[in-house]
Image (cartoon, rainbow, N blue to C red; front, top):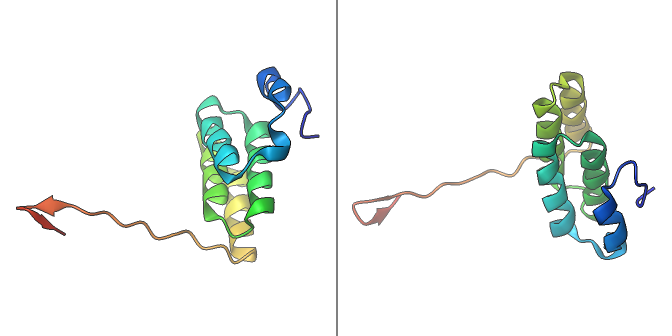
Length: 104
């Protein structure tokens, strides 16, 4: 399954990184899928991230965003529902601004 050439591009099959891939590798791959609209590879990468870190909200959000970019709105809803079922919360983002030499 992980070396299926119908899902993984041939270059990735020959790299033989699958067994050693960590969250960073899978996350980068998943992020790239949003722009290439490679849905099957996005599902694979998200699944691998969820195996390594089941509460990783980034995998759910990136998979959902990939589905949204491909206009697969039912799948977007399914991923969001899965987040709720698994009690996965999106991480709160914070922004900092400097105004008049003061961080706000």
